[in-house]
Length: 119
Image (cartoon, rainbow, N blue to C red; front, side):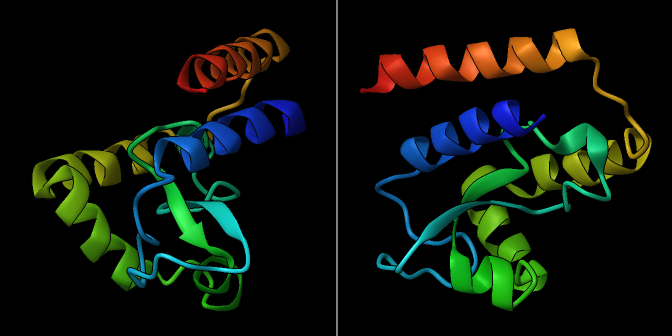
C-alpha cells in the first residue's frame, strides 16, 4: 500500500505541478501533498481515484484537515459539479473496499510508468 500511494501521489503532484493548491489557491508552499477530497483512511475505494486526489499545500492538507469545503469548491472548478457528485456517490459505494496485493502492485507500476512519461 505504501509504495502504491507514494507512486500515485508523486504522479498527482507532477500532473498538477503548474496548478495552485486545490483548496487555498496558493502557488507556493513549503511542501506539496497529494491531498484527498474524500479521505483515504475513510473512503478506501477512492485512494487512487484521479478525481479525488489533487496537489494540495501541506498546510491545507495537514493543519486544516484537508480544508474540505474549500477543496470541494476548487474541485468543482477543475472537474465540474457533475463529476464531483459522481465522486461523492462512488465514495459511499466503495467505502469498505479492500485492495489486493496484486492490485496494489499494478497501481504502483502504472503510476511509476506514467510518471516516467511525464518527465
